[in-house]
Image (tube, rainbow, N blue to C red; front, side, top):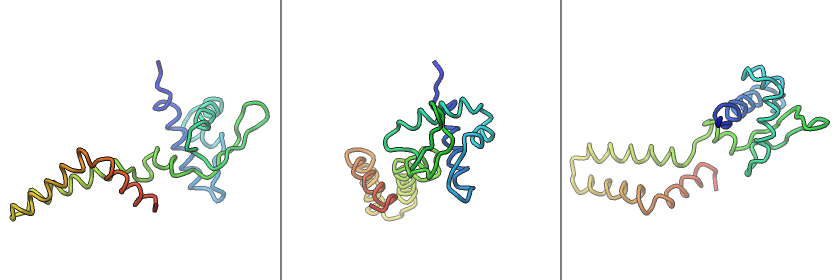
Length: 143
């Protein structure tokens, strides 16, 4: 079975976000997305319709045409930007923090301080992981 997310939907979403950011009206057309991805307009439309059912939504607005078509998508959401790696994800930031703490622990000449770093690492990679991700998510989103 073909993985539609990897082969179609993610490239369409990435192209739509890029085109919305490049234009003056924060919109991407099906034709523009097709040109950017090399897919047909029919393939782009199918992908956009699959993406349209996602919650939270990927776009602030989608203009549909007569029948089951799509003409434009507008205003990519944070959900869309995180999916295409344009905005950070809390899990990725937690990995960066753990790498930084690990480096600090390895370089720390004071064994008590190094032990403290290792305790924090252990906490945020085991039982406190969900809490750490929640805190980082709040920082990213301004919540």
